[in-house]
Image 1: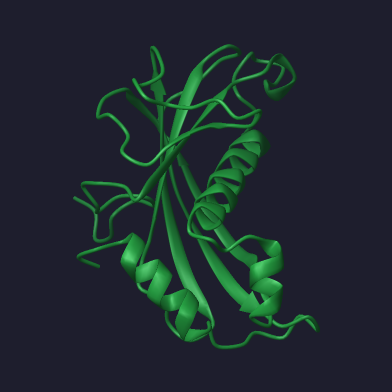
Image 2: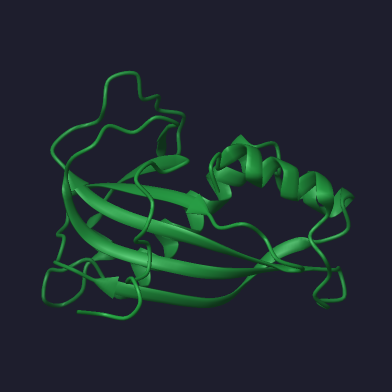
Length: 169
């Protein structure tokens, strides 16, 4: 029995999901998805979710800062291989001051869900289908930072968007 949940655990319904097809250059010498590739997937899912909420880079800069990763924690549950279709689910904990924790679960799936769209980047849907095998769970502590790199309180407008995207949190 563990005292704390593993990263990415503790929420039944994610707020956002993005799909990634593992490319051959993203695997290591053992044929598994390289650990660093998972960081790319979760970061891109976070960017896509923020953009979906209207918080693209120009909007964040207009609000006085951008989010920078302060700490990542990743738990590897099973390997994935080149060609696999991965669903990255993400949701936010309530923000606190300059910080917000973003959670992720990555699942391997057999196929894309109906209604998913392809837009020249990861396939995105806001109501992912359940299923698939858990590959990774993770969390990232994001810090809202001013142009000089100093942490600053997350603007109320951003907090409101985050809370709207995560009802019940």
